Length: 111
Image 1 (cartoon, rainbow, N blue to C red):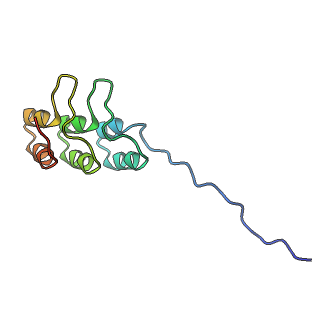
Image 2 (image 1 turned 180 degrees about the vertical axis):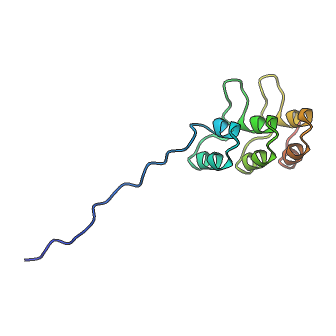
Image 3 (image 1 turned 90 degrees about the vertical axis):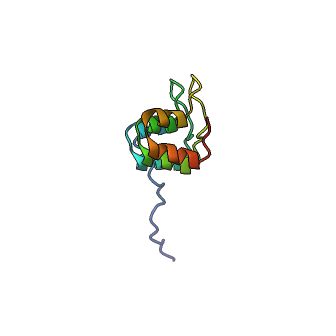
């Protein structure tokens, strides 16, 4: 007779539970790690909020150039328009945020 082998039961990996439900919330909290995690999970980098602003626009309005860079590196479109037609580049210039303005221009932002 052959003794049964001692094999551990297979366990499913733990579920991935991000800190925030969407990219916009993570951007508003300035949490770059959470933004990366959500984008790795397939969340839409350009998903607008209920006011029509994208996460990139929110990062520009918050004067968070590091977040602007992250979002651009992850595929955010710098030329999307807010409901009034304003683009992120205009928002950066209006805020006097030269760092974000420079990043947006390098990414191909236009008026």
